[in-house]
Structure formats: C-alpha cells, structure tokens
Length: 102
Image (cartoon, rainbow, N blue to C red):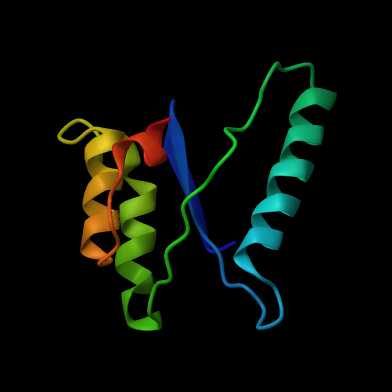
C-alpha cells in the first residue's frame, strides 16, 4: 500500500501489486480482511459490490499519492460520480451510468 484516503462514499488506494497478483484478487483480500477487522471492532460496515481499478505509471506515482491524500479538498469541487465518469472516459472506456452506479 503506497497511499490510502477517501471520503464518506468512496476511497482511493494506490497499491503496488506483485506481478502474479490480479487486481480482482487483491481487492477480494483487501475487502475481506478490512471487513473482518472493522466488524471485530464493533462497527457496522459493508463494502459495495463492485470496484474500479486503474493502472498508474511509475512516473505519475507522486501525483497520484498527492491526489489521494487530498480527497476531501478535491471533492469540494467535484462529486464522486463526476470524478468516476471523468476517470473512465479519460481511460478511453465506455461510460454507462447504470453500470457504474446501479
């Protein structure tokens, strides 16, 4: 884990995955272990069903860490929904609001 941060309705993580670990497996392990820890501390919590994963070049690592560390500031100007749509479109993927937000 290189950076972690978020706001009430979402979080961002910057993770360096070993070559043989698929993003889906990393998210599965992260959700399972964090859920167990949170429940052991008496907190009602549930992860959403899906997740989004984007690769980041090493040359952008510092900028992404800074972005993650300042989520509260960032979201004063742009909602989570607008941010996710922009990230998906910037990545060249098709954006479907129903698929993204249910």
